[in-house]
Length: 88
Image (cartoon, rainbow, N blue to C red; front, side, top):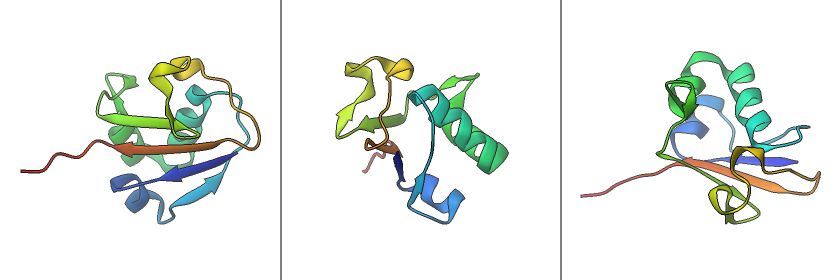
């Protein structure tokens, strides 16, 4: 399944897209931290929970309105992950 990373997450990985073999969103988060280390962990987690400023979409739908971190993934799904940005 395809994972698209935007904004600061793209800067950490030096790529905007990667392929992962995982079963759910929780495993996507864990795999990204495993692959990219402490910097990715700092961006994605707050006190070992998904940071509330991180948005995760599955095929354009917010995972919060699906099954959260337990949302099951299929091989042809597209997961997009990005931090919320605020302007002023």
